[in-house]
Length: 352
Image (cartoon, rainbow, N blue to C red; front, side, top):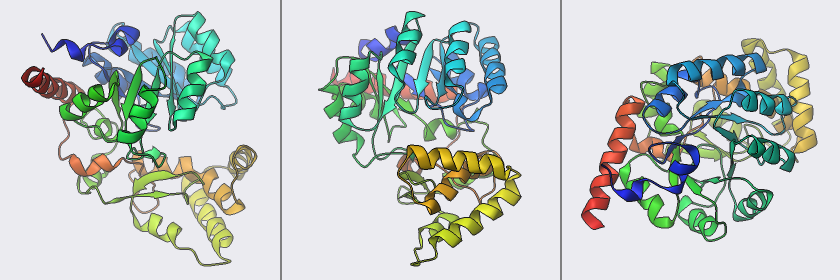
């Protein structure tokens, strides 16, 4: 029997044993990781945004077979061309949680909720939390600046209490969490649970190649950088030779450098010029990017895949939270969650 404080509103909302969520990391959070997390009592999330529709169908079926009915989630992009079809797929398959990297529109929220699916978007600012709460989402995932991948500038310890004091739905804290102490701290701030990306990436259930995991494990808390040079948005990644090259600005050369990089990445990745152009133009339309950033943005997904799937440290981009410097082992998801809960329980039992 664990401390009663470890059973939160989030557990009841999502039907999970422990208030721990594995984030939908692109190219990382596949069926094996998501199912291992859910089977350990947390909520595993499939990274649907980097899967084709057919691949997502197969991944959902795989996780359902592995978990035997335990809750899990699917992460999608609300602005994807086939987002409506993916919403319908989650409804048909009775996925428990719909996770959105960006705010879903009101129609998606209403439709999903009408079919009993929990809707939880990720947000990085107080005003975003207020907006989606007004639209009717069930919970929000709040990522502070320590988090990996696309991130904001406000630390979790400042952003989290802002959001908790603003909305009356469950708030999940992300950015900087890796152990039982962090879970207790998040609960003390008023959160209903924590979400972790880098910590779950560095488990034995993660599909990331062992050589890449070894590269992560060598890093310290100062070995990450927030750059806009990958796709125009603040992006926390491991500092590598590629990132250092992208960060060097020589007036008048950024466009030529981006184009040269794009041609090199295209040759290595095999992605078609047509697909690159479509992706870049879509980002140019939706975001205020320079043409140099557009060219790089069109390659960002390929660069991340090259890192996390193919292990290409020479051309890859490695999203990571600062917490990477606090991690030194590769437990299974079961071992990780058991350890976090045991440590949190010991702390709470001592002080409460």
